[in-house]
Length: 196
Image (cartoon, rainbow, N blue to C red; front, side, top):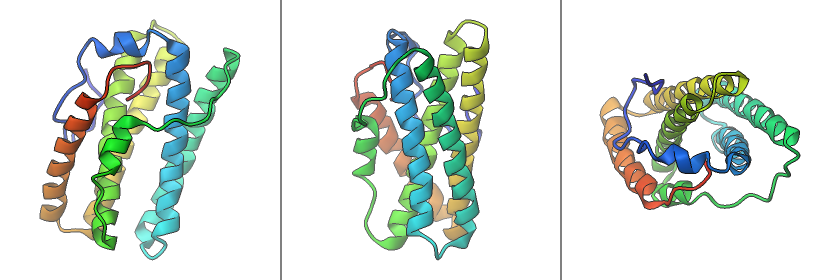
């Protein structure tokens, strides 16, 4: 059973052997996961800062940023319980490959940032669910299931916001392109103990 949103499907599903590598060093996975949640929170606030003239996104993006920051805090608590230290951020090769495809131009960039965020959240939803299903019964498994569901909700949020500002055909055409970009990006990065 998958929790990925029915709004759209990723073109490539994560291979079943990914989780073995991802969880081979669960401490490293947790540290990377915390970084992803913190960066997602910053993305939400960057929409608020860059697009104050688009009031329909402000409340949703503040709420998104707060939720992702809370997720970061929750993962950080797991890290602290294991006496781990948060290292400086490293560039996420998967996200970096996609961000290079974001177009210039105010409207084009706005649409692309909404859609790339939706697609990244979709991948996060899929992979967090895989992690949850690979963990033994208990609090950690339940925690990752909750986070997977939240990522699916975020996937839908970014897509719905794009439809407020752009015609359905424009959104769908560019979303199809983003799904191809994402498929190429996710297959080009090697497995590691990380979300992407």
